[in-house]
Structure formats: structure tokens, C-alpha cells
Length: 502
Image (cartoon, rainbow, N blue to C red; front, side, top):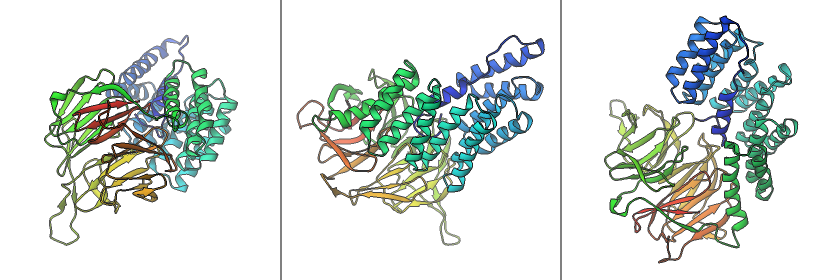
């Protein structure tokens, strides 16, 4: 479930929970109220089709009930966060604001409208439209519970637009004016992120720590622990001590003898996935046990899409978990000639919009591809070996031939380049890269048996190496992944398993 930015799971849970508290209702309200509660229960259980039936039944049969506007809001949230259907989201919001303009759900409808603008794009016009929607909430509904939510999302909009200082001001305004709101805690997390982006990690630590005091035991507090663990590791422990150490934990059975490893991923739910010659192995990273397997014949890559599904890439085909397939073909510029199939794909990622970015090794480009495999165009002219996304949906592109890294925004505009040799480092054989939640870039160098960590402004922070023949050494490393707390998972071909570092 994605909204935008790094706080999606927390914010979605809060949004889903912002329902009416039922009091004594007349008999005419009892059935729509029960049906609404049923829909919320289905939604929380992930049974979305049943939830939508309940919400739609209220709108069709009980349009004058006190929960009809809430049902429309839940439909809009579903379409925005889960279905990623912009037109359906817009239709639900338009109906809510037209039919129920003074209802209790109208303020949050303006918030959803602003979020939708940012889902569509990040042009100056999109940003201005989003901010205007958020600013209407305190003007039209002063004192409403949606006001701090609007303030938070205004900050998120500015953060995504790279107006970090302005975003920090909005987040701090939420925490100052609504200190007892759950949105204040999430704004503290976002403020910490902004401080890290501005190379002020020391100031971010207490900002994020405050969340644990505001909402102890909550999902936001858990996120705060994870973020501060990353900061402690990179800015307090290092450089005086190694940022990482071998945990002693190993995931996978050596007898499985995984070959032709295509990558390692930790998904949003915490599953640890290993792509190899025979498919995708799914592990419980805590227990280290194999949970399930997605069978596939020699995948060259795999990724998690915007709906949380495993997508396997093999030759010119992307195969979803539910056996949906999509072939990728580039139209020929010459009339009458067959399209060229994209059959060498070493890496692919999915944007929140549903677009896929695919490394076309033969064409030496990164391509934009639709969820149905439809070729859209060239994303950037870089011969990519590996792709990675950060929380802004910037794209890290590892170019094996030049041993360099290109960073673009999600529209393909080049933001910076990290050369093979720079201040304090030299890439020998970079084979993989990934980002943590705070935007630090991690580069796995196979030849040097090292992981190099760069700041969000792409300055080297630290290098992690374990001497050969020491426990946890990774002299034949192939792939790297991080979990929410920055724990590192490295598949090493000598160990034949995934080794864990923290």
C-alpha cells in the first residue's frame, strides 16, 4: 500500500482508522452503519472487493445516511492507495465534495485530492494544485481533525519537490500546533528525513527519537527505532568503529546450492526474497527458514511491483504471481519490420505510478514500460547492469562497463553521477546497489569485498569490509539488500547463502 514517501504504512493505517465513532443512532441508521463497519473490517483484512461492495451499497441504497460520505472517502482511499486508479479516485472525491460538501469527510476529501495531484506528477502545476487543496482545509474547516493531516501532506509535497527547507518548516508547524495529534509524530519522522537530506544527521536523531515518546508502541515508534538505528550505525558508530558487523546469522540452506543469482530483495512486508536459476525463494529473515517458492525457469531479474506482487523477468516476458504475462517489444522505426524483443534484462524496478523501468542490455538503454509490457519509450541512455529506487523514486543506475553510477529523478532527468574513482574510494567491481529509508546509497564491490555507503548528497560516509577467512567474509558477493532498519543481506557465492550484517 503506497501513498508517497517513506511513511505510507503508518499514514494509511491512520487514514483507514479515521472513521465515525458510532453513538446512539435512530433505527434508519442502523443498517448503513453496520454495513459501513463491515466494509471497514473487510478493508482492514485485505478483502478489498467485499469492502467495496459494502461501501457502494451504502451510496446506492442509503445516500442520505450519516455514513454515505465516509463510504465515498473509503472508496477514494482504496482507489488512490491500493488500486492506483487516478480517474476512479477523482470520481469518488468529486462526488463526495459535490453531494456532501459540509460533511465530516469533506475536509479529508480535500487532502486526498491534493495527494492525487502529486500522484499524477511533480510538475510546478501539480505541486501548486496539491498545495492549494491542502491549504483549503484549514480555511474551510478550521479546527477539524483533517487540518494537521493537510499540514503533513503539504510538507510531503514540498519534500518530494526537493524544497526540503520549506518542507521542514511545514512539518515543524504541525508538531508545534498539534502536539497531541498522531500526525505530529509522523511529521517528526518526516522532519528527521529532511534533516538527513540536508546533511544534518546529528539533528535528526533527537527529532526522530521524540516519536517514541509521543506514540510508544505504535507503528510510527517502530519506524523511529529503525531510522535511528540507521543513523546511529552510520554517524555515531562509524567512522570510529565499523558501521556493520557480521551478525552470525545465515539465511538459506547451503545444500540448496543456489545458482545464477538474479538478486536479493527485502519487500515492504519484511519478506526476504532470493532470485536464482529455478525461481524466487521467499524466506522469513528472522528465522532464516524458507517459506515458499515461486517457480521460474532461469529468471534474469525480478522485482516487487506497486501492488506488492512478485514480478519475474525472463527473456522478453514479465510474469506476475497470478500468472499474468507481458511481453516487451520495441517498435521498429522501419515500416514493415517486426519489433525487436527485449530479451536481455539484467534488472527492473516499478514506480508507484505502475510504470516499469527495464534495463535493456542489448539496446544499452533503460526503458519505460507499462504494466502490460507496452513499450513507452527510452527512460535514459545508460547501459545499466542494476537499478535501484530511493524514497523520492530517484533511480540509481549502475553501469558496469564504466564502473560508474548515474542518479536520475523518476522522469529520467540526470541529477548526478558518481564516477568510478572519487574522494576516498575507487570502485573495482561494483555488482549491486540499493538505498536505505533515509536515502543513503550502498554499493556492493565484489572485487574489493566491500560495501561503500554514500550520503543523500552522494559523499562517501563509510566503507565496510570483513577480512578474508574471517566469519561473514563475502569475497564472492553477488547481490545486496537492506531491510527497514538498515540490516544488510548479502548473497555470497562462496557461502552459497545470504549472510546478515547489522
